Every structure is written in structure tokens, then in C-alpha cells.
Amino acid sequence: MTARALHQLTAGQAAAMLKGWELSAEELTSALLARIAAVEPVVGAYLRTTAELALSQARKVDESRRAGADLPVLAGIPCALKDNLSTSGVPTTCCSRILAGYVPPYDATAWSRLKSAGAVLCGKTNMDEFAMGSSCENSAFKRTRNPWDTRLVPGGSSGGSAAAVAAGEALYALGSDTGGSVRQPAAFCGVVGLKPTYGLVSRYGLVAFGSSLDQIGPLTRDVTDCAHVMDAIAGHDSLDATSLPGQAGGYASGLAGGVKGLRIGVPREYFAEGVQPGVEAAVKRAIGVLVEQGAVAEECSLPHTGYALDVYYVIAPAEASANLARFDGVRYGLRLAAGDHEGMYRATRQTGFGPEVKRRIMIGTYVLSAGYYDAYYLRAQKVRTLVAREFAEAFARFDVLACPTTPTTAFPVGDKAGDPLAMYLSDVCTVPVNLAGVPALSVPCGLAGGLPVGLQLIGPALSERTLLRAAYTYEQASGGPLSLPEEVKAP
Image (cartoon, rainbow, N blue to C red):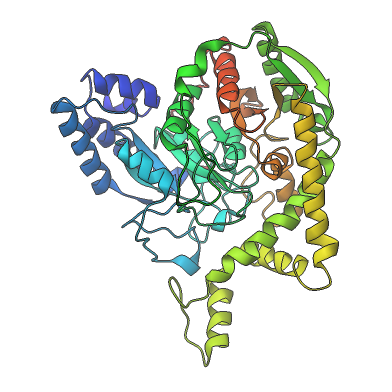
């Protein structure tokens, strides 16, 4: 296989070649780095690359394999990490000026586990600042474009991770999902994205946005790769107080069970006004494929869905205002001199935070303030309970729910940048899942107008195996994973 074609491999295909010595990890990594050099000037998926580190890690994998070691599936496979995941010795800025130059002294648990499995890090990916955005246009440093059409956004906030996988600049990547930030860019870029059950993947080392909502999740070429990454990163971590107890794993080994008898609920609220006809048609065709494979689908209702977006944009900014209070110029990151401490805080935060982050901090501070806490934050938490309860009632009848990941395909760069409310509506299909703490997966289900569409499968807590099995069944029955764009053209 030529170096030109190596970036087209799935992680599973590459792992088989590495195990059979058809390819070395160093050769694979060199091919991915060459691909990055070729397309990165147009795509802009990476905030920084780590070529020397990647080659060093790849050589170590080759040495271990030559010595006869039985290595994990992901050993020697090049990957990318969203820039809000702490990486010892490698800057982690959350794409914010306020953290410019910050180098963590420790690794996020998810990255630590991948490193232990022999992962090769190609770099840190661009994102919306502090994960606040749906288009990857809010980064303080650069703009990422969609490899399918570089006039379009890749989605957000994990847009850099999704674009890197779609453009062949990494064989898989990690992102974070607070209100859809793994699934929405996965749908826009035609890759697989999973938001795990809250607490299944450790948040230790993930720079917090909304602590009751955030989850780390994989972005991959196909469902099998997604399962392999979950096998590596899921499981209890004593460093995370919200980590679920017990063992996790077995995701890749359970893919081939089929969907005969699987009960699928199709919530009508997710096909309401605002969903593009092409998106609706593609998703319903995909549900039909699962029915052909033996599943049973029935329409259902989740009436509180209409309130979820409003609730999210009270709770998430409230948690953000508390979490981002730590960035004050005292301990790390940007610090601007002023006449006194209060002046230093004000100057540092005024200059260090971008417009969207400031907007959410102000909203969050307002809804938590005396006189407004009960009217906004407390009421939003009560409605959140109703949303979670509604999901639980639906899962008493259905094994999974199926709906669009996003109401539209990817939109043009700049199209919603000046209209925050229009941008927030991009998350209308994804935020209820985070409020309920349940898992959801986006799998490509065809094209609409030549652009990828995502089928979102939602399940009860800890149903990742069921979601992956259903997605794998669909993927295989529909002819395999979506073919990603080979040529990436400048806009």
C-alpha cells in the first residue's frame, strides 16, 4: 500500500497491518504526518502538531513488537486530542488567549490510558474556545473548515477533532461533549461520534466547561474503531469523583450480535419544523434499514424536548461561570499588569476571554445571582429532572431512540457567527441527552445535497454496547462506513 493511501485506513485496518508486519508504526505515522502537511493549510484541524513526539512513540511501539510483545489494538495508531484535554509537556490552551502558553504537569486520564495502550499523538486539535460553540469559529487562534467542503464549518466544539479524522489527518481523535460537541461535528464531517454515559469515561484532566454535562468521547472512521477506543478509555477512575464504579469494556467484542427484536422509538419532536427534508429522509431511510435487519420501530413522544435547549442555556453557562472563575491571571496563563489585584483580574479576563465565553459567563453569573437563582437556575434544574424522567419512561418501552443528530447539514462559515441564537439551535437534537446523562452515538447515514447526515441513536445509561451494536449493524447493512473525501480543496 502506498504512503498516499495509508491515511485512508481505519484504525482497525491499520492495526491488522501493523500486527502482520505489513507496515511499521513509524511508516504509518510518517504517512499521517505527510498528510497533515499536505491538507492542514486548508483544513486547519490542528492547533499544534507533535511530530517528534509522534515518531518517538511510534518507534517505541515498533521496538516492543520486534521484542515479541502482545500489544493492544491501538498500539502504533496515530491519533489527535482536543485542546481541552491535559497533556503533560504539551500545551493545553482550550483555544483561549487566557491559557496561552500553559503546559500541564499531568495527563488527562483518557489520554493516559491511550498512551498506555501505545497510542501515537499527532497533535492537539482546534476547538471553540473553552468548548463553547457549535462551529469551531470561536477559537482565539484559527478557524477550522469542513473537509467535505471548505466553505462550510466542521461543527463544534470538537470541530478540529472531527475534521482531522475526516481529512485523514488522524485515524481517530478524542473530543468532549457538553451539549453535542462530539456528535454534531461527527454528523457534519461524516464520521462516528459517541457521547458516553455521564461518568463512564473519566473527566480527570478535561478542562471543565459544565461539570454535570461534560463527557469525553471518541471520533472515528467507523463503528469498530469507536468500540476499540471506548475499550481503551472507559472505566472507573479514582481521580474523578463522578466516575462510575465497576469495570467497563467489551465494546468491540459485542458488535456482531445484530438487532433482531431491538425496539426503536422514533420521537416525533426530533422531526419537527427546522429539520431539513434531506436530513429527515436520510434518517428515516436509516431507521428503515434497521427494521429490515429485524428491529421494530414505533413513533413516540418526548414532549419536554422543546424546553431542553432553554434549560441547557441556563445550566451550562451557570456551571461555566463558576468553572472559569479560576482563570484570573494569578496562577497560570495570561496575566496583565494593573494598579491593583482587582484591576489585574479585570484586565486579564477582559483581554483573555473571547466574546462567546464572556457572553456565557455573564449569562451564568446572572442566573446564579441573588434574586434570580430561583427564577432561572433552580427552575431549570427542575425541568432537567423532567427531561431525564421522560427519557427513563421512554426506555421502559424502547431499547434505543433514533433521530437526526443535527437538524441540518453543515452550514457556511460565517453564516451564524453573528447570531448566537441561530447558532444555539444547531444543538437542539443533542442537548437533551447531556441533560439526562445518557449515552448517544452519531453514525453517518448517507448524504443530503452531497453533505453527510448523522443518525443519532440514544440509549439508557450504560447501554453503549447496544448503541454500538445497532450502529454497526446499520453500517454493515448499508455498505460499510461512509467514504471520506480524498481531495480537500481551498474555498
